[in-house]
Length: 494
Image 1 (cartoon, rainbow, N blue to C red):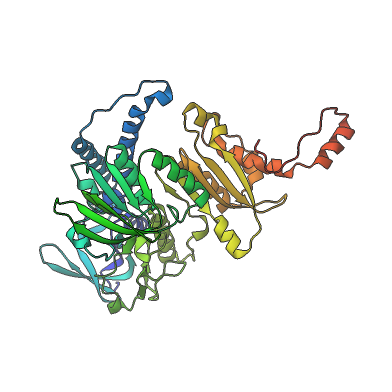
Image 2: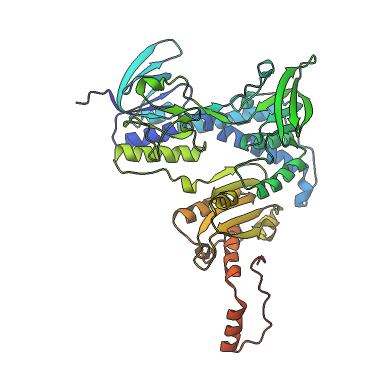
């Protein structure tokens, strides 16, 4: 009989913890999952689910106001913001009941405990519940999946204005007249555009020179222009220095933009300037687990420096995406349950931001390739030549594919800005992971008319780059063709 109460203990019930617990149970491990709040974690309660629901509502409002774009008549939509937010929370609750409720995992044989877990020693956890009761458990293996939270910067006066974060913004029932967003990353840009479309005045303060700094700057510039067309005021190179409450009860934001002082008064401030791993209460030192300010330190197998303790998802400080959290959980459980040495696939991590238009990326960027001295060619294809985009009046966008030069080209990275970019990037992720060439994508039949056909059309540009005037002349002589010679330009778009 094992000396431990459980085979595997999972700290956290978000995307990473749920995946890890489910896999462990499916392999027959006696499993306990400890969650401090609600199963489902950040994605279900404060991130993906409520934000995408609200984004959809705002898009319907926007399309109604701009119906003439589709040959209809513009009209002002009638809605109540509180009812919209009630709908957002309704969808969130439905997702929770369908996928995240404790009884779902208990039916798998998983013990679900509600409380805050902390290490007592490398195999022992103490769990404190809200009613002040304490329980101690032991486990042979422990998986840390405690997630992350919004990082609220220590800016003077921030405590006086009660800023919103992703954990509180979906609990609001009153639309702010003026919303200030601090941060031009994915959360900041999604919410800035969404609240503007719902009727709020919106100002974004972003410290960097371009929004979404991890994406292709050429494509983020296209996106910035589109968001500004919606009426969002985006201030780049603007670092917030102070907050203060005005006599009228507004939050005044002071920032330094290119050396000049800029002040804006708003009735709500959203902090969207990064995230922080939830490690403070874990008492990692008691287990000897190493960490940094970014999170728990793990290797490519998701192992910490303590052999039987693993960490997955946001708590590690790596890419903070739900899909990577799930991937890391699968990696860790494969190593724990099957003893098959499996690494994180960090080379083929797709990400998407669900603004309108969307922007998505997988693989290396041009900056990455230039920094490492790798030679590359660029294949481009515009949304204005994708027939489905034309029929949908969604012609703003580009597909940009980075490949190795020559006849045996490999895909190095792909960036897309445009409608359904988040869906389209998946094909490129599959291609890169499995060594599929741009020629093979070009030779694969894609259904017409779809946005996915744009991927094939982008890959078709590989053939354009291979075309040679000498080869055409040789074919003409061999078969007696008499037409004019084509213009050979590797950068033309066909």
